[in-house]
Length: 225
Image (cartoon, rainbow, N blue to C red; front, top):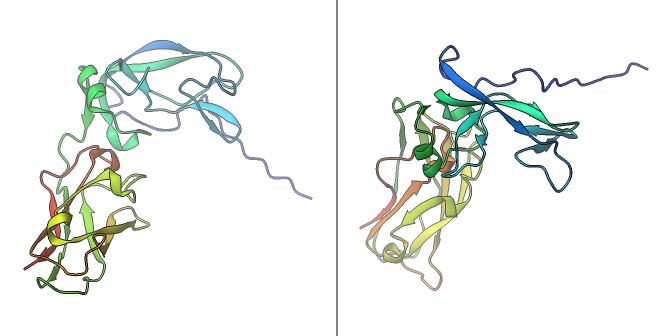
């Protein structure tokens, strides 16, 4: 019987995080061997402890000093890692969006794209008449110039406003398989049975957008008049 074997070499670069591979400065920093309970920056992937390329080092906060260049396997021992302290880094290639504090701390790193081309969130908003007792059907809005990241289905990762006025709220958010569209399902605010005049708006957090930026303004998805 034929045997199948999967080989993944974590000593070789697996992801290009640099927007300009020929223009960067990196210094070496040691990551200790990872063991259960003491993994440091490593994640358990296919039975190996891997520090992912693009991880903010040493943490994604005000202490940040650089971005880890390649994947490093720290299962069997300590590893010296190349940490980029100067260069142009692709946000979409990172495992986690850099926090505002990390971006401020990483003064010699530029995260790109600086401005997304045609970055927008468009769709046809739902409309209803004041005092209506039926909710509009689901609506879908689509991103251009970016995609949604994990967590976009979670309501708390959006700023949703106007629900107390219109007496309707977003019940669920469903993200399309290509991560470009969000479908909103409405529900009455608890204890309410009629819509009131106003607008329901949404604004995604930067952390759930692939380029690490949010929209310039909230988007109306329901207007009641």
